[in-house]
Length: 260
Ligand code: NAP
Image (tube, rainbow, N blue to C red; front, top):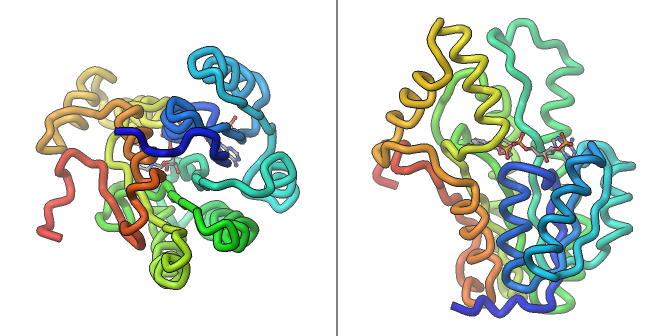
């Protein structure tokens, strides 16, 4: 299927590796010029080079922290009027006991999972409305729907963000601007590998054993390739997806046990 995206522009935050990278690559494969953001310039430039070499699109790399206002200003200066916005942030810290978190820690979590994506949407949605095309895809998490270990730290701010998106998505869709959230379950990224190492140490087992256990948590019986996630993001960004909005789409191999 031709997604009709050739020549469009996308801003993808937190995209030097993992799910953000996969979204940027899938969009680039559709002919979208992408601006990718991450903090460390080395891996970011490497990813930009890889995407450029494979797809031939224009790739702009912005080394910035998307959780602070200055970093977002830098990203938006490089890509002020994206047709597609993919909001993403690194995962929450591994904290085994929430009692150890102080006010500043909670503010940092809200900055990362609520303020940052809302600020990016604020800065870009009106341009999308004027141009009568816009696709906003937010990477959130299965924890929005289902409890799950230490990663629950992000559940509160992400749930608040999800509530905000539910309202805004209905306001802007008449202008052909859609907003949807993608909820990853277990995708094989560096972050998940690092998480697996911590959990293996805590459980006193090998990383391979932890992988097997994690894979078995989903009826699919496997941990998914991040590119499956990236391709879903590209589909939701496509011209055909203009009637899909305000949705929370799980990519979890059936792990969430509910009917809806
Ligand atoms: P990852 O492999 O650790 O990749 C994170 C990417 O974000 C890197 O490129 C990192 O580069 C960048 N980044 C981190 N903090 C940033 C910041 N403040 N500003 C700009 N860029 C930043 O993580 P992932 O597995 O792709 O996860 C992405 C998101 O999905 C996270 O929020 C995670 O909690 C959520 N999630 C993932 C899974 C999964 O299965 N993978 C499951 C549930 C939820 P730098 O470090 O250089 O900045």
